[in-house]
Image (cartoon, rainbow, N blue to C red; front, side):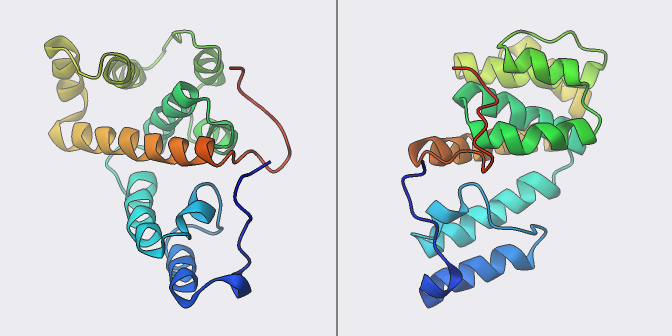
Length: 182
């Protein structure tokens, strides 16, 4: 059960309603995930949702790779709702289900696509060691270029923040499922 009551629009302050309306005025079609928590700080909600909209919809990463990065973070943090929401998006974007399933089991996937493998290696090395080796950096730079590497790091950081909020406030999938084992 979530630790924070879901705020109804009518219960929100004017600032919270503005944050709510700004979210729905962008590319998102619903209020989900960390947004209920963010409404407790409308200024944060406004800033975070704009960064999130960029990370989700506007980076130079194709959706397949962006969603792969999100799944890597969701698994790292065992963020149930993040995984639940983004696995279908990843599959719809063309990620092989075997890749997602291996990540869910905390196993290294067998990749058919080099760009996925490079992204996975970069992301997991950064998460696990808090740094990236020259070799891994060079591979990511060659595969994606500087702009996309910077944006990949932003996606990883943003969704880490989302996972922290979701886990702190015990936000779970609406259907009660727990798609990830501890």
